[in-house]
Image (cartoon, rainbow, N blue to C red; front, side, top):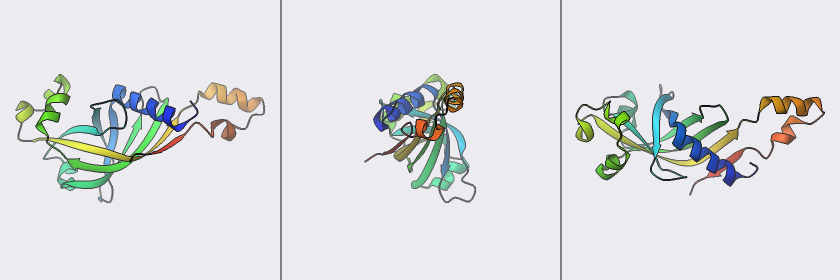
Length: 162
């Protein structure tokens, strides 16, 4: 993969498959990332939806909308990403209905109408994506005199989402 669009496509596919991000609110004193299950309704470019609970620190600190970051590593450690954007509370019942599944249901005794359920919407504006090159091949290239920085130069992506 050598261009931003291909790397971005690879990211969205990996996120849809692996789903776990470390999500945090920017500027909040204890806004360190916490693991959350991310879902996308469609292929590519989000938005990303996260089911949470109204009584969590993250949701209480959120209010309505804040800047947030999410960090992602696919299960095979083949791809790393940092996302920056807007996180907002969004209890759109139609979206809850579309994203609902047995794994989400296990967390909410009241089902889709649980009073503590909070759907979050993360609208990524900037992505930095780093595919992980196979270290064996990188080592061989280096032994043969190849500059690893030059070989990796076109294998990262910075994407701005309008």
